[in-house]
Image (cartoon, rainbow, N blue to C red):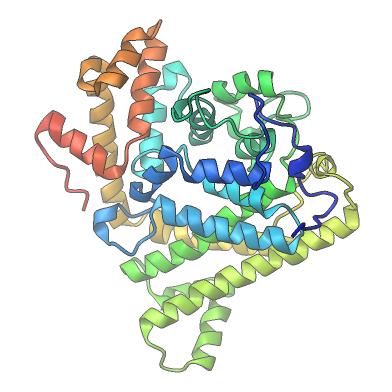
Length: 399
């Protein structure tokens, strides 16, 4: 059955194509093929054993980078369908958005960025791009996944433009500059770094915010980092807690926590849909490029819920991300990555033969260290720990 999309939705039949042209599929659209290639990639499978907040041995029921990604994809599809966008593209972008994350989440990224400062640093978004255009080695005809322009554009720009209209880096990159892999690729692919991505990429980006706001509240409560009563400090959450108390007096804690999470997700999604519909009605975009060139985000929260999103993040930062239990594990995880980088940088033969050979062929020190960085970035948490044990004979507690 053919689905009639909005005029401003991405159209797989008029995609700007792939770097290496391929025959079309008789059974799948271009964006469905992108989604499927991402799901079958090695980098995607590794997300199952990469941290979201908690390292895996802290419990089997906390989110991993993979389960987070699946939740983001579900929310991105819901928003896209409500706005009559191409939900296959939105799903593909949601599934790919964290491919570049290292072992131990942002902790590993911070360590690798510091270690590579003299050679361009490390950025998980740029690493995701490198994975899908180069580092995945699966196909006979090319490196990477040979994804469509629309998927690559959305992957690079899902959080907004990288350059200002005058060509200066956006504030996030004011000091370091836009990561070199993105700049180099843009010269060939012309992603339009001064404009927003299409609506599907914006849906995936806001879905990411919704997912981690809700599931970090859920995981934090179940881990005992904070209690339900603490949520009353946030007006939005106080209303939800009061509603559950009224409707389900005496509800057991585990069900109460889930009721909080599902209400947070529902209210945030519904606000995005309503606010985005209002913007679309006002702006009347007639094409995907109209959305890109709007000069501001189209698929996002209303102004009131921007404040709600900020309040949720302000609550989670001290209560969860900087909780002493979490910080203790982060410090130990950082030490693991630091040791691995130092050891492999000093002796590339400590890496598996394939990686050692790539490093040996590198024409200069910067490219040699980038191979080391790529090897470590691809590790799962448990593999990083195993390598640490192999190299040092000691196992970090990570508790």
